[in-house]
Image 1 (tube, rainbow, N blue to C red):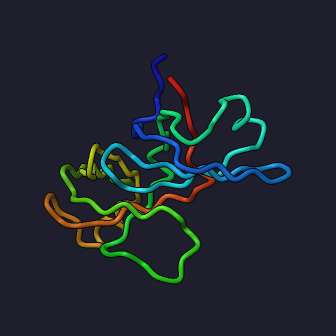
Image 2: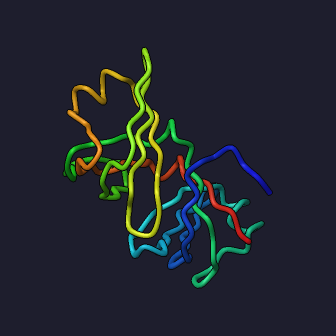
Length: 139
């Protein structure tokens, strides 16, 4: 299957916590980072997710925010440190490629945000991803 979602990070399920309607799924990405996905309980059951299940975490580039360092006191569960490897700016938007342990992410942010953050190829950043914006796929 080919998808338009650029951010596809391989990993393994480490925990699944189900509630009445939703489930939180904790993953260990192949690069060693931990990631949390919040998906429907039905999806977790359909995918037969359990510790040890290999998965791919899928995140649209428009759902990746960037910071210049780790943040405290934030509800966003996923903070992946990395370095900018590519930066393309247009009239309104910027596409930022980030090398993270075990892979690469792309963030689509405003040109103004890229300027305000002082981004350049080689700069350190932290990719911020809400758990509700992480989709999961099995092989």
